[in-house]
Length: 431
Image (cartoon, rainbow, N blue to C red; front, side, top):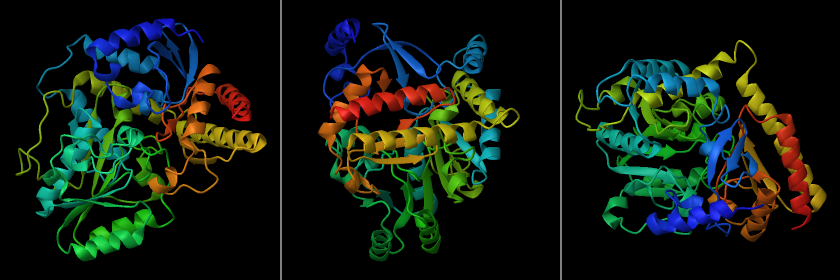
């Protein structure tokens, strides 16, 4: 593929933007080479500045669950923008969004909007500490909850990709109250509670971790986390920034039948615009200012354009109940992709473990099961690099890191999946 225009743009970007990118994983450091630049997207496709067409499985890292440039979202954004881009004053869309999320997620009785998933997780942690009057938080190895100081400890996503899970610039004291446990390990969590009696404010967890590739909770594991937090007077916080409204209308907590105390959202509820939110039990949420002593604020929180885009996204997903089920369609496409990729790997004689949950997926170049970040790290990353670039040359775009989840949208057709599987079979045979 010709990428001359992208190369020229990247050279220019390097002069003015650190690393030439505004988010580290976009830099292609994990796979080699330079990133391409996109100037148009529609449905399941993106087009780069050189005119190359790609089937996209990054989907804006999750928000584009209906595909790119969905007409109802575009119309909603245009209509909202005509009335002003931001007010700094309450607007009706905020109330509609809050009501809709509370209706779709039974564990959420009240919710507060933010401008990013990082803000949502940071605020939920502060609220948990303020409500319980305890300091310590448990997180899990490889789970990424945004780039907030106290949570950037053995994290996933870009931090894991670059081998620097602990960022420079974070004093040790900022993370001294964050305790890290292996995911899917009940005994480790029990030991932490035993060693820190009446000190744990809560557990924050991606119910389906999607920042070290993708792996699923073992049967009963999320139930265990719910039970042990209740037993010790701690709070269970689900980071559903990725999984919320993607794995089901009510997110991972609906899919697995768990009721967390607090939940964090983002991505899908913004329809592709910057957004985040956190919510949960009313008595906990009422600890927030102006009602309570826990302070949290944001100039652009509840931005009218972001709210309009998110509402269009959620309402369109809900509208599918009348004319076909969007989540059933996503599941079917996921099953098709999983079956095809497994067969392609088998035929090529290449060891691949393919994990999937609904419309989220990841293939690891290992023949061993992947249940946590330690398992994920055994994947052959050199093979992944070759696979990534081979698929890119075939017109298929996966995330440029072994340690990121892939996403399917309702715009992905059976033909898109078939083309992807044919391309994978060809590339895998060449590894």
